[in-house]
Image (cartoon, rainbow, N blue to C red; front, side, top):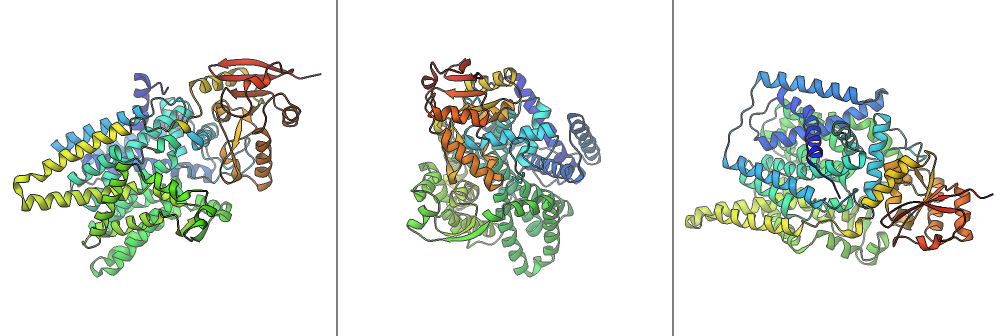
Length: 612
């Protein structure tokens, strides 16, 4: 169970406020009174995430480390700047019905996100294992690691913005890395809806539309709520920053070209590039479309240099990380053209088209995407930034098709789980436009109230249907597994080596099947199969791990092959969960040289006794 009590809630709230400080200080020093409070909140959070990522990169380049004392000092410095900025110009807050609805929506959404995660003792699925592992590395090393040593003999070039922020969140909250990732991930789930609100306001200054977008993203859409079942917290963080950067670009290029907006755009661009590579590509696509749009309009061309400088500055700030990343991953980056038919399954996996279609569902999500598609096509005939955004959204929609032009290593299913952003904004815009039209033509209908009631109904339906959003098939670690990892950390030597059950997975790699795979990120104990980031190492090492995993995945008991693996790999402990994996407790009964030392529910840990 998630074990979220009052003390933990207070610690998370305090850590969240401290994460807001860098962005809030920037906004206070360069105030923008045109923004409503929700926009200021999410801009502060996005700037904070970006500043933390840039700070981690600076520490890596300059060669210094961040400890709790330094982080506290930096937070205090940001607080001083915030107070100084507020003293210069007091912010204004006007209470309104919209403000009340926004506060209520955010509170309900926050409660919903934690309720959806209520049964998780550890973050779900494969990605979560290496996310927690990386947060642990950040905490142990005091910053951005250069390699995955001593656990994996390979370089580190993964997008790291989420892990840096989660590590800071862990320091300020006092939570363990796994709890910090799980709790911080739910906060990001709320922030993604707020960022969509902010982008909607930049495209069209209408709080009705923005509030509807918040509701659609937060309550009605299957994504990003379903990210919880995959542990896709890096992408979730990217989907917080992407709309914020797009909004600043729109504000600067198509609204008022203010220097403060250009500064925010530069910071958010860098943060997006460092937090998730796919969202970085999507931002680059939008900025390219925006640049062309600006150049084609004579009265806006003078804004292009400022826009280009801001984007270039943000990109330059991220280059110390992007350049080595491109060097290490050059073999997996490319452009492909996939033909319809069997070529799709051959390139990805069997029934790939059906898989993408399933990701776009369920029924309520098909209705949302269909509404967004119709509204997007209609927006092509309207002037203003919404037309530009519709083009961007339609390109994303086209990229979810299993065939066509592809930028490797990203696949159509990666795009399918982010089209909720353009679909929600475009659908909300279409509904508000329809409501305004009906108000003019049929005043007695009172369309605003009618559509407000419909919006409330669909949100309640979405809340009900997503209350159990986690797919049980992606949960392979329970409270018993976490208890076993805590025991292992306290009762086994630091150089212990665990044999765990594994199964083949994607692209020839293997994955764990239970809490045994969590022993490294939770307890700092080596397992025969490391977290999935072992694929970052040299090919010889990856091949060796895959061969070993293939042998382990067939072990069923106290056989000669079993002892061959144990002796060759120096195994000192064995982790088994009843009913999961090929090696089961029954296969080790009466096995000489193997002694059970821990049991919790279905979890067993055995010690290998040296044989004379």
